Length: 439
View 1 (cartoon, rainbow, N blue to C red):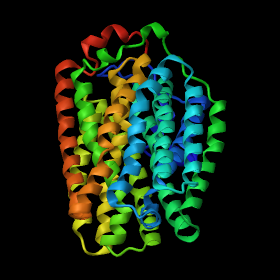
View 2 (tube, rainbow, N blue to C red):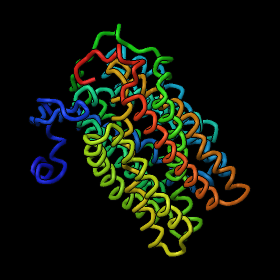
View 3 (cartoon, rainbow, N blue to C red):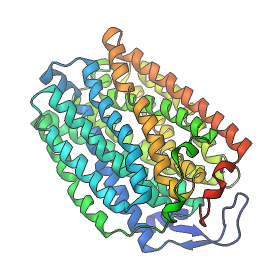
């Protein structure tokens, strides 16, 4: 694996910078990463895999759940909406805990929460029981994500953060794809309950592996930044607005994609689950790694380089999504989704890196928690709202709305760039909190 990585453009992931600062305070002399850094990233990416498998396994089960519970599209969309609402509400307190207490403990709590909640989902005999159990999956993700991302940015230097976070996000994308493929195959042959049981059990092994990690160093608790001070940074607030639109669009497209392929494009459930998952795996994982590399390269030249990379990527993705939604031929649907997925996945690594670049180290988890609170709470309404529109109009029109919202999010990223150019990547109001090397 090391040989494969070292022979291509991912080589910088295995290097950190040390020496004289570059144009934007980024150093330029590389040294190899140590085993602890590589192990931390590998374990957290594996946990992220299981995390998103637990979230996305329900997606291919939508046709089965519709028949079993006699549910409308609006009620089915509410399954994902309430998961994201709980995720949003719990993100701030868990981000607060992660910046103040042991992050490994917080992560283990998160893994236990979503594993148990996914297992319990398979026991649901009523829609209300299933809704409650699926919502509890969001509690686990809220505990895990801010703490894990904070540990990664603490372990890797600033100039490599987008690449490191992109590897972490690749685990998420692979897990989402794996959960969808597994849900489609197991659900079709053995029933939706067994798909949930299997994914719930998968969380145990990586959860145990978390205990082998060591916490990266960080400053004293007295340096923790109050949330109102974080929200005084215009670029951060504008980024939250952009992220809300992007989350609304992406979770809606992911949630309804397989159901749309089955009911509008003549795919079978198994065919849609496997083919869309395979395409998503290849395009999104390649995209998140390329996006992290491009973003870090641009950041060396421009202090808004990472923002520029993801804004342009979303604008490039939009026309291919429209092609996929409107095409009659299945190959065009798959091709459009593949190209769009490649560009949309550029977002996942750089967005966390940008937030952490803006914020002091003792605010890394809290700032991500605040970001997730708003983006998941408001953006998470997408599957439910588009389900309502589908009930009154049709699902194709709903997905076209999702693309329009995504474009709005991309344009809002240019507003973030404006504020960064005006105020700097680190706003003066937070200057007294940037006290550690590497902040």
